[in-house]
Image 1 (tube, rainbow, N blue to C red):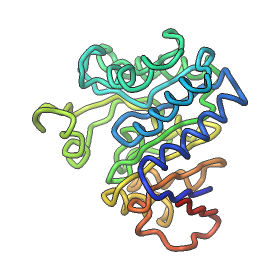
Image 2 (image 1 turned 135 degrees about the horizontal axis):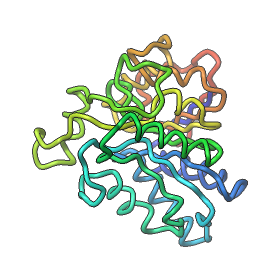
Image 3 (image 1 turned 135 degrees about the vertical axis):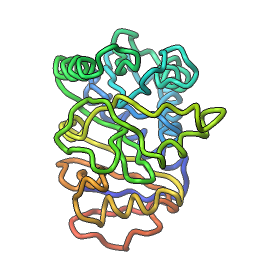
Image 4 (image 1 turned 90 degrees about the vertical axis):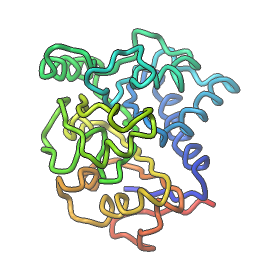
Length: 254
């Protein structure tokens, strides 16, 4: 495991973009797992800039997003389909048929989960998975106490997650209570993982992820067992980490 500590949110995005761009340059037909929310926005802005300035080519890239709200139509401004097009896909040369998100409107969520897993498998698996982290250390929408062996599945959102996501809605009561999410097993099968965290509100979750025991009570802690994971933080998110962590390379940039 490698931890990169940066001096700002934008530098966090720059370091993440360097990894993602390198992945694409080395393997133009890479399969990327992508996240939504405010945390990866600096990453997406930087990748768009690299595409526009030096021609980073997404034409052969395939993407699979982590999750979607259940009951949310793809064209809703609150959907993750909409979010990804607005903030990333519409600004790069990715082929529309290579973009994949789980459906929040499928009649049978268990069947939708199986369909999504089959699509990932047919694509050859995820080469590089991008993650954010919730204040309760969730990844994707895998809330505390989720089964580590879960694949793409329906999840009930914790009250803490609902409150955190309320900033994207007019009212807290408008936040959906359920989502469909890649499971921990799916995430752990990715060949490489980068996790991004920014701000003091994420510091405790980061500490549990890196310094605590591996437990479903802190879902991101399972990443301690992944073969190739990079954690990219700003100084605020890294504030509770010790100067040294056993078995972890820590690089301070800025």
